[in-house]
Image (cartoon, rainbow, N blue to C red; front, side, top):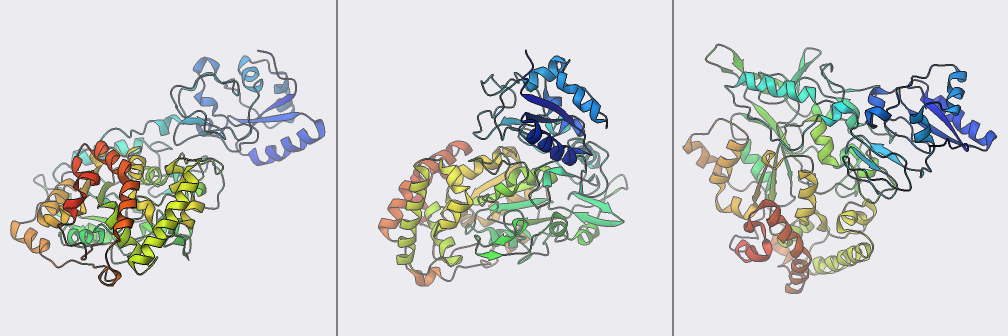
Amino acid sequence: MAMDKKSLFYLLLGASGLFLVVFAQYLGSISGQRVVLVSTTFENGSLAYLGDISINTSALDPEDGIYLKVRNRLSDLLQMVNGTSKNVRRVASGKFKKGFYYNRDTMALINDDNLLTNPNIVQSSPLYTLSKVSSIDSSFARQSDSTSAPSKNAGDVTSNANIKERSNAAEINGPDSPGRYAMNDSCVSRNTGLEDILCMRRPTFLPDYRNPCWYEAERLRCMPYFHIIGVCKTGTTDLFERLSHHPEVIKNRGIMGKETWFWSWKRYGHAQFYRRNEPYMRLDEFINLFDGQTISSIRQTMANGSVFHPGVTGHGDPMDFYDLTSWRHIAQNDPRADLPAVTTPRLVHHVNPEVRLILIVRDPVERLFSNYLHARFGETSRDFHLDVTSSLQVLRNCTSSRSMKACLYDERVFRQLKTPISGSFYSIHLKEWLRVFPRQQMFITRNEDFAADIAGTLLNIFRFLKLDPLPTSSLYRVANIPHYYDTKARRTAGGIRPETRAVLQELFRPYNEELATILGDQRFNYNIVHARSYVYNTDNIWG
């Protein structure tokens, strides 16, 4: 393949990348030629700067791989212009579109139009001369999203060790991580002003703790063992409070001992549907909300004389399920794209891959009305009807040219909505979480079933969390605790107007059907069973 004589080809040094970018731009301006920048000296060929094009050279077919190491001398760089290697000629000869880059997290070749999204089958295109992509950042590719987390029973300390060893091996930087979450200096990404979660190394979790914990400068620190991800106004607060009555469950230091607001809001400097600015929260501050000392104090002596710590902590941030609208601030995403490659689930998985997720859903219309009143979007059923009408028009305008998912995940669209309607599109958001976490790692139930059988639901969740069983008397004592939280505004707002309910049921119809299909359970098809939901007292709302 002939060398493109209108392009100068350079290889960037890892430590000198920024300087060379400036130099290349200067060279291009004085020569009138197009300068193509490619990085090979970063870890696993990861990219530092996009320029006109950046590619992960370690992802090429082994026979076509670029293994050239450029030194500091300018003559070594200029020598590459002649391109004696077929590999260099092949890459440099293409007519590359600006904005094309390699996404490390999704292992997908994508450009401005997201043309190529399959990491394993990349077909030829007139825009690109790369014919084959096999992998990207091999250590990252070792992570498996399709296998369920092994059991972490108290008596299986050896199994716990294996789990931690496997988790550590799947890190972006391999097994030599320090005893803390630390930035990998050789990991490179777009600078967004926020800490890059996907460029962080996980510590090695302790095998004698059920909860993911580690020692950092002789201080025990812990991540959450479980995460109630959603949804707002489905009973998450009531559930979390009841779970905390188990002697092995420890509340966090956040709001009500439950909420941190980290993943969806405070990490990006906002809260409460963008209506409030917050100081930016870093991962280290999030970790500080979990009480390692109390976890350490819960001890069991095993038959072999070893000590095991069965205590766990968790958090419940019900907006995390659906408020994924800050994705353009995640370094691995192209902010000009219509849809994200990386969202909150991927970030959560990267730092805590075995976290157990709990999701409660509820009749989507009832959930929306309760959330609307609780978050003070409005006060009456009349307000609700008017604001639903406005929100539907916003979504109609957007979906005339884009997918519903793209509209719901667009911060600008989200800000225009006068109701928290996004949270009721359950299937869209569930698919996003299931892209990353295996189904076996999620406990999913309905608010209606929780209300009808609190004891049974708690029993199943304790089993899901691998906690020691409660005595029957204690279980029913916890089940009979009065509801922890009521939406008092529901009592004075009046019922949902029939015309409002009808239009919302029609809107959610296909998503209800899809949810039931995903879960293989028609109880989740609220088109069929919504009438049963009203058997329960909808004026006494939990969460």
